[in-house]
Image (cartoon, rainbow over all chains, first blue to last red; front, side, top):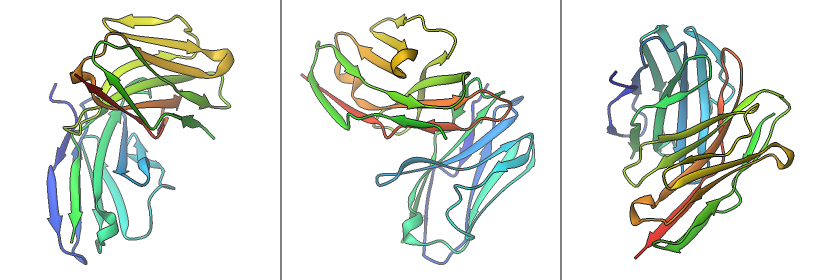
Length: 112
Length: 115
């Protein structure tokens, strides 16, 4: 099993540009989570899906952020337009029934 | 609402010392899971342990041990004979059981082990 796969590993973009982060969960897992990690706020949940349906997006900072899960094997987190304060490490995790959570390696986003 | 508190922001120890990382949690559910994750300097989140709320037995895995006490809502983590490779940020986390349960993290404890 390849684990949770995130791409890209690093992304540097200019303020105002659109950024798309990608995640492939573990096959068979039915829940997918997007977390953001910053020094100031720690690890915070942005949104999570169960069976491809968004369950709770209350952690999404503002309308510039959107997430989709078109099928069980793929999810995207999009920021449009990006701002310097969006710079962080974004983690994707998947789970089966909430019993265990496997995290991807993260995407380090830098907005300049 | 669920909450996890890790009061120790940073701990420094000398190699071979024992160290305990504290974790206190809050939840209204009677059934839940508790976790510990390690985040080494490379940045990935490494799963260490999951504990079901119905299982209060302490667990030992090599130099690592965990003490779960429901009465005090604590799930503490002890590293015996610490090593430099143990230097990392350690996160305690909580999830309420269910088909779709979010994982709530504490703020983490940075452990620095020096020679």
